[in-house]
Length: 571
Image (cartoon, rainbow, N blue to C red):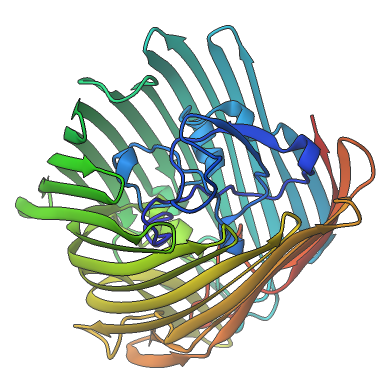
């Protein structure tokens, strides 16, 4: 679900770069432009090389005037933002876009950070590697001492160009651990709930992809993954997707097909509490298998003012514990430039199934316990309209409204069992049918090449079939960010602050169930760096997020502040 909610509502989505890089005007990286926002700069044209700083991040809500193709949607109509680092690793953007670097730091609250990226091209080959490690002690509200979160992932990729296609292979390993996980039993008690929730995941795949425009056979991707968790739980899947495109002047006929098989094993009953020295057998588990098939024939049209996409998404969901379900829904996406560069209107209508497995749920809620079964959500209906534009190539604005209905959406419920002076606490995803209305206004202003500010305000109204409202959906969000360089670009500064309004949560204590109020909270991220040599810089950062994510659940209070200092080397 990592990308599901990261929509940059614009006629052409702008690619964002994860991470911070110390750059100057003289070493900004030339990158190939695939599409350009109307009104950005008449000198920047599709297919040209333009220098820009990759020092942009989704956390600061900044955007680049360049968009890149993804397999998720046709390139001429891509509303979603994708991490440049991820696209580079997947072989979809020039490796030159992202600089080779290594970055490490240590600091307050057991904070450690290690981050790096390396790419090397020779002849028709490209090799890439990436590493990310983020560890820190975090404050949890009802625990007597803090808990340690540990996230690590590493990736390798190789791509070979053969004629008009790129052939590639990639692999990723991810490790997540949450120490103390809410278990605070007195010495005379024990339980099968582990004191450390560990999840290991390995994912690998191969792909073939056209690099010379759309083709009748455009791309094919095969991927497999295996994840193991506490109490011998786990997930695995195999996926395949392919695209076929037939351009005819301003029209594009396309067919996207995909299929996946999932296997899931989870703890099937609440944890028991035992007297120490007594029995604490492994809890009972259950397994399930299900399949997901999809085909989307579509027609696209593109002119100077109008982008239009009309498709029919057809899906089948079947499994060992679910009835076979068929879904067909038109997908319509349109963008029209009313006043070139100044005002564009866009809209979209879509729906479909989405599988939620342990990996996706873990990203949304790092406190998730072994009682997490894979399941599917159905976005029955989502409609979105908006306005966007650019003034004088320096101020960009967006106004959007969206309404959606989702069946089987995750609703996080905190289970707590009391025994003497101690307790067990863990989260289980329940299922809920929700409706969410979202109104958002955002803008960013480039003061000059060295200073950029942005701000947004968002109103959310979530209703639920099960609870009084959609759980953990804040009433509103408001935030601002800044990014810039001073002293001839030797000092880099960036910061982001967001206030999230109050929401509702749900807890079960023994057999007592109740809705609870979750107070509003502030999330922040800040970083400063000093370039003391051509390739070297010092940095200091502070935040209260987990691996760049904002997580807030009842009982598990705000994440606690992490602060560290370190050094970065670009090579």
